[in-house]
Image (cartoon, rainbow, N blue to C red; front, side, top):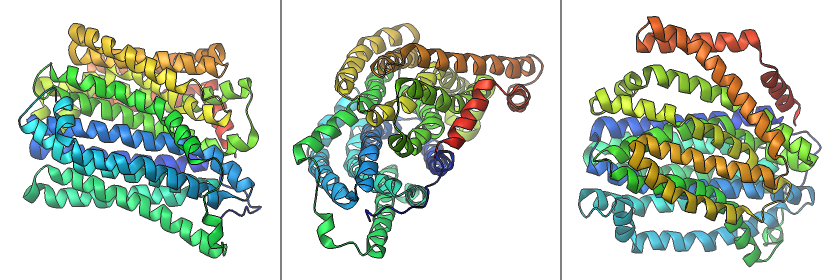
Length: 497
């Protein structure tokens, strides 16, 4: 499994397409699950409880993704040194020591944690959250190992197998939810997530076994090698600290959203998930796909800044399209997709929330493409401190902004905290002025094109028609103007192999 061939791996753009396509399908299935929940269970204390537990799952799943990002460069170097199998075994042992206590804790403290997540509720919301946590936390733990297996395959220049595993898990998990939500209630959502995670880890694990068999790898090669266990656990803590903190910013907002009223946490979760899914598909996929080639190539400060700006351009064009559509037709789309519980003022509020989250999406795109570079260039010492500072900043921000602007205020607080994180990352990588200028320029150009494309139809047409026409105009203006930054981004990513 650790022997290197002379054949070139897929280019970064193609690998990014594989990863993005998988993430798009996973996000699409997650959206479909949200639609099932909305249409079947409405907007109630039960959905508030389930989605509060889902917030914990997101935190742990993002930690799994962060560990995947962090170990990609190490596994790439291990493959070059012909010790990939031992490195994977060492990481697997460290993950087991980290994951087993998590699963046990979910079984033992589910009720107290559920009460905290639901703002002190002692009824249906708390009970639903407690039941869901006992399935969702083991599912999140399984994703830790799925990420390790996917990273090992990426070091072997295989991005398609892991993408297939994540996609297949999503489809089968969704099928279980659809079949059992009627007879068994909302807990079927947690069951589907557990099945999803099981398949996501099984497919790449089997693929790694096949690689090992074909390479006639001796059993001794699977003995853990590399750093001692405590150093691996420390590297997990460093790698997961910032992504965990960024998701904790969202979790911090949930109790404040609960103060707005029944159903408000559900609306906030749906708005956040819509925005986060777009960032994941548009930016996180490129961050993953480019880590291995960048590790092999090496990066200086100027190359780091160029990579951040190039990767951000493509992601921001997708963010601009989504913001324009939701600005004009968010309420109609939300009501049509999620059902009657989300029509009228509720649908309009949710659609507006996605638009208000646009600044947070810009900052998150920057973080998604910058964070993996910290591990590529080996500048990770400040990550835990940045994480602590971000959470400490978000608590008073969320309190103050919710008081002033309610759910919209929580979106504003997330943007402020995330931009603060991005600024510190830029400074740590010594690219502050160049990268920030490039990112803001890209956001400004995309924003101007959005105004050109969507403003005129909004003056003459209905909401849905104006959004459709505006989207066509948006694509047409991009094709006509061909912004130099976007063209440079495309050429850069095609050449990065």
